[in-house]
Structures are given as C-alpha cells and as structure tokens.
Amino acid sequence: MIPLAPEIAELLIARESKFRELFGRAPGRHDLLLFDTNAMYSPAAFDRAFDDLMHQAGVADDVAYASSKTGFILTEENKSRVTGKDLDDWREAIDEYHRLVA
Image 1: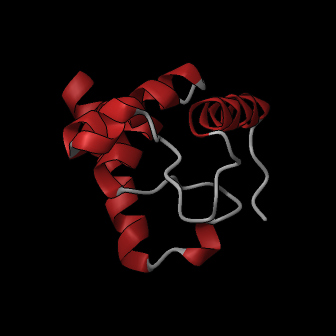
Image 2: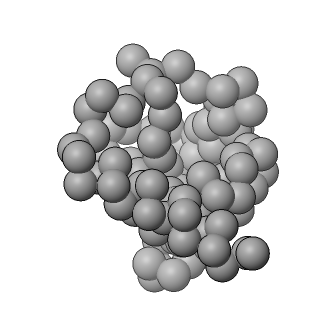
Image 3: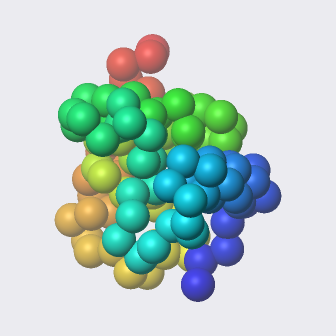
C-alpha cells in the first residue's frame, strides 16, 4: 500500500462521501474516483476534474503537469515500480513544465 498525503486522504474521504450520497452505496472496485456527472462525459471533463483535484490537494504545479502529461503520479513509494521509459517521460514532463513557465 502506498501512503497518501493527509490532504489527498481527506479529499478521497470526501469523494467517497459524495459517491455514497449520490449512488446510495459505497464505491466499488471498478467505480471511478472522479465519478461526477461532468467527469463521466468526456476525457476533457475528466482531465479538468483531475486537475482541480490536484490543485485542491496542494500538489506542486510541475508534479500536476507531469501527472496530467504521463497519466500517473510518481512518488518515492512507487518509483521502483515504474519502467525506465515511464521515469524518462516523467522527468521530461517536469523539465517541459519548467521550460514553459520560464
């Protein structure tokens, strides 16, 4: 199990409460984390909802950018589980972010 930052854990608990309120049951294994109606209709809406969640959790802008770009979040805990290409893609996305904001 990968430990979560307290801010992300709080947001996930809030998401679970919202899911229970909307669907009347606990989220299941195959339910979407970002289940809101708007997030379910298009990839762009999902991306916006994911970006909003990252911002609310206080994730650094370069990390949020790299996550959106690569499709995963790199942490010290999961770093050993990613491929060399994934790690290269992550680092390139971080570098790209810094070039874009410079």
